[in-house]
Structures are given as structure tokens and as C-alpha cells.
Image 1: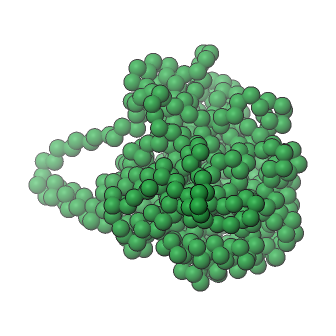
Image 2: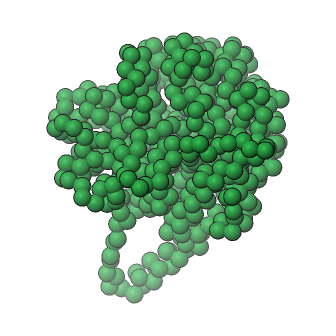
Image 3: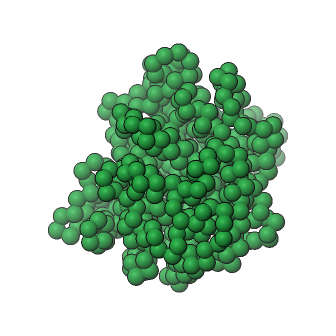
Length: 507
């Protein structure tokens, strides 16, 4: 999870209406029958639909010195350099690595009706220095955790990488180094070899653009620049080279891991989780505003989607990179290699759209903001309608792949208060209800959605924001580790059980 920078609307993603005249009655009839079949299949979640929640290893596990774990880049940022504030680290987090604690959490999740759980395995636990011997203590821990989930009737969805790059590899350049493709593939092979018999759904890599932006921000902090507390993930001219180079390597790493999975004859589904966001402009947007917004869409959305589903990178983004003389290390066959990997599903992490306008200066210089009067959470504008628009776009422009909503959630300033043993998080509760309704609407249009996961299951460590912002459905007392389900958790449970969304109260 992450915190976004904060017009009214002229969506670049307004639905595209396609009119076709059919001259033959048979063709029209077949088209109607196909459309009806799509509606019948996808009108609402099936009994096999994955209703879940999500977390990330560094944000929840704590126990950073347990079982020979190596250091990650985030141990360096938070423990060594104190970038989130004095004493703010992942050394305890919510103690989720401890089995006594996580068994209680599994029981709580099961009581809510949750049938799937997305979590990440920590690369520095499995291979402490990133490339050396496998740490079988960590393997044993995660196998036991997966088994415990399955015994409770909760399907594991395993994320191989959720930002905790082993420090030794980060010091070699991390994703900016093309060797990272092979580093990740070696790690992925270890995961497949040790968990392939008990896991079927894998998210290979989570939120490439947000991770890169977090690293850019952390390096700025290390250089003494803390002037801007926002996190615009739309690459600016100053960060575009680092971003595009890293994105290409990350996608190639996922593609190579997918090929290793295929060669190993493992069974299961693999995908990547992308933080996709519709790009919006003001009703009175200038030509420069619109031009920046179009490129921002290219950097943030089309760069990933075009490579995965079309085998090309966006020409406008490549042209801009060439004009700026950026060294982005994109080889002629890279995008085709990514496309040919054939991922079985697309993970979508949706929180909010980006409102974009042209910033100061000439050339590409996008600025994100929240328009006056627009309701906003910690992570941006609250626009459930844009989730429908996003899913419609994936369906119409990218071949309607199978989708899992791998993250969706929100936090609101001042809302998460524990009062007399209860947390009434009305705004988060309404956010979840409205976004599930938006997902259902897209499914009625024909989108193939296999699961929905709330970010996050628990309040946890929010990276450079520390423990200031809460996003969980389960309240965590940082001092005692006591868990308290919030109103949103109970309402989500009722939705899972099939209760009508509009009848459920968030108060």
C-alpha cells in the first residue's frame, strides 16, 4: 500500500462506444447470443470467487532476525537510516511471523468468511543474501503457514516479491541492473521447487511503479531532501529514466520466471499485480494538460498493459524517452518476450484515479492533484466509478483477460478510533461496498473477475509513512498487538455470505 498525491472530469478513459452494422441476420444473432452468455457467466461472483484480503511480508511479519533472515533494503531505510522517523521500524510490525499470533489471525479471518489470503514471501528470508544458499528454516515456516491457511479453508495466493529486495542486491543497483532479471528468476525457481506442490496461484511481482517511486523518494530523503511528503508515481523528467528502465527489467524478470515455471511443469496460475489508475483531467484542461495526461497514462498504465497483452511498448513514451536521450535499456525484443510469457491472470491494485495537469516549465512535466470538493482518502480521490471504467478498458482494449482485484482499500484521516472496544470505520466500509458494486457492474459488462482482495487485512507498517496511517479491516493496538475487527470487516463478511450490499449499514 502507498500514499498518493492528491478538476473535474474529462476522463481519458471514457467508455469507447463501438457501433457495428451487421448485414447478416445470422451474424447479429450469434453476436447477441455470445453477449448474453458473457452476461450469464459474469453477472455476479460465483461460488468459487475468491473473497480475500492481502498483506506484505515486511509490513506485517516483524521478527526480522528470526530464522537467519537476511537484510532487505527496507531494513536499511527504516532501521539503519530511520527514514520513517526515530524508532519506526519493521522489527515488530504486527508480529505476523509468530505462529501463535498468526493462528489467531487465521481464525479471525475464517470467522469473517474470507476464503483466500494474499501474502508475500520475503526474499531475504528464503535467500538471505539474494543469491546464495537457500534458508530451509524460512521454507519450513512458509510451508507451515500455507498449510495452516489451507486447513482453515483459506486459499493461499502467494506473492513472490512485495518490495523487500535483499540489501546485497539493492546495493548492486536493484531493478536498474539488467542482471536483476536473472537474480529474480533464481529466487523464483526456489519458490516453485519448494511450494509448487501446495500453491496454485502466484503473484510474481507487486506494484512495480510504486516500488520504484518509493525507492526514489527514499534516496531523496537520504540526500537530505524531505521537502515534499507526497508520492507522485507518475515519472517526472528527472525520474523517467530510472522508472522506465526498472519497469522493463521487472517485467522481463516476471516473464523469465513464468518460463521457468512452464519448463518445470508446475501446475498453477501466474500473474503480476499492477497499480492501475485512470488518468483524469479538468473540464477546462489545456492542450498541454491533455498531452501530459496522455503520456502519464502511457507511463503508468499502457507501458505495462501494452507489453503484456500487445507485445509492444507505447510509441509516444518511447518517442519521449528518445527525445530526452534517456538510457532505458529497452531491447527490440523485450516487449515481445513479456507478451509471449502468457500470464494466466492480471492482478489489479486499484485505489484511485490520478487527476493530472501540466506543472511548471516546458515539455513533459505532469502534476497530480485533487480537485476542490472531491472526496479523498489517504491514497487519493474516492472514485469507485473509475474501477468500473478501468475494468471496462481492460476488457475492450486488452482482450478481456482473467482479472483478480489483488488490492483495493482505503484509509481516512482521523477515522480509525478504538472506542469502547469498537472501531466504526464508516468511510472505509462505504468505500469497500461501493467498489465491490463497481466491480459487479463491470462483471455485468462481461469483465472476467476471479477475485477481490481488500488491502489490507490488518493495520500495519505503511513503508515510509510508518504507523501513522491505518488501512486495515482489523484494528491493531501497536503496544499490545491486540486485534479488533472494525465495522468494515463485519460488513465485508456479510457481503461474502451473499447479503445484499445496499441493505448493509456502515454505522
